[in-house]
Image 1 (spheres, rainbow, N blue to C red):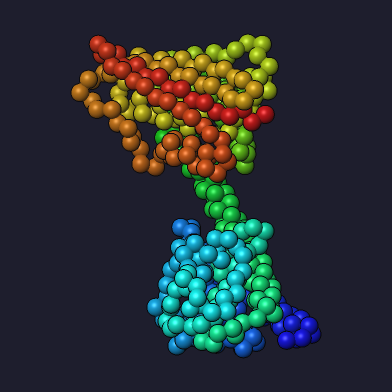
Image 2: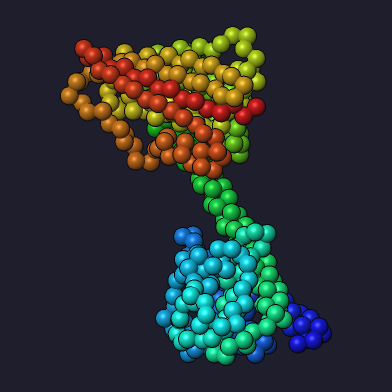
Length: 387
């Protein structure tokens, strides 16, 4: 085979593989052209799987009596046989007489010469091309050089296809997560502005108006308006300044107190003169949804004399929110309802989605104790400081 013929064959293989968009087409094209263009009688292409085992994926010759159907496909661990040895060392081998090589493994028939080259690129092994012939000494150094070049082209193409596939998969995951995040926000908004909350808040404001308590009516209506504007503004945002979230919490708890006839009290304490708190930025809706769960659940569970103490601290990397909650149960036989409303967003699901989609590493711990009719609950929430 002269130099010009060598180049023509490589160009042919390159053009033939150029339009292939999946690994199966690549491997079958290589196997077919090794027979058609190089004059071989048998060619098998292996890919290495995640268990470091070579698996037959394509073949031309006796191994495929029908199109793309392998006859008794075999699997070879790395290091076993000539094919496994080439895969392990990633060095091509030319065997002139297989009867003299104890590593030879008979597949569908015994053949006396074998040529085997790794499909590898940048020290990464993808598979092996293995060709056999019934005659001793059939393969030459020129064949070895040619097949090695073809294997390199094949490896580059496989890498390209896999990289493209990984990119598409990553993009699909990003799109899916974005959809889930938007659905999360919409569900959070729907949960916060559910009809009971909105109508009860407006009814309470209306009561103040009809009772001529105009100052209270204006105060609560202003709070309600600020809260709604905050919800709508944050719908398109992934993060929010900590101070804004604390303002939101004040507004929300104030309206919930009105809604539930002052059935609970709350205090919020923050470190004063703490630069980290002043600058801190946290994920949106996490604190909001946590307290929506707490307040609604306590109401459904008929708890009385409720008090929330919320303590907030901040460092350069995290914001720590600790909620100490205690109450009495008006009826000790009323079970704690942990799934108080079917359409409410599960707070843990929200946290898990944010950790998966954004890598926030939000952590939380909950502990509770009941002693002499007093129910105490402690929630520790650690959020990333995203400043």
